[in-house]
Image: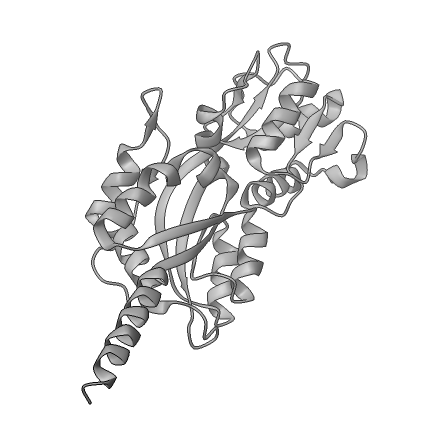
Length: 275
């Protein structure tokens, strides 16, 4: 027994070190939450509060959901409520919770070839862009922003895919990259406001259309189901969901600002522990 004590102690130390190394979660999320700088601001606060590191995979919402549905992640934080609810209904995650919101806006060049500046009807503005054959840069990546854009085109009665490669350009990129492309080609772009505020390459581009209720942009959070995906770190994931819905997490979101402007508005419907 005396000889085995050092071995047992070493094994305990190695197990403890391994456990410490495993105190991280994979957070499948969007390019807008990363490009806006939100995660750089709030995730260190989460780690300081819980000792858990959140490692972010920032892709379009559609890809984030597909990744999580393969079990490649522990928490999902995205902005396409219908797709999030389908993810939960299919058994891939626990309950979905509202976390925060902001809105979308259509930005465009100062010359405003479609004459939409100041409009508040986003679908009518897209119809005017189509009539003018003014260049529109779409993310085209199955992201939450792309899906919101497609809903607006449907409301306008226009199939933009029929004009792909002419005035309608699909970048297949995240929000920041699409804004860079749109600014470079003098195009209109649908963007989430947070990324636009944080975006540093605006040149002469400005917000042309805002204020339509259809531009509302809600974000939700879901812990990946361990029953469906055994590798999911369910306990740590619940700690993240608990934290971001808590007063502390919601206050962290509310306090994030760029140039004095609040980028996200917390609206968790509940506080306390998540089951």
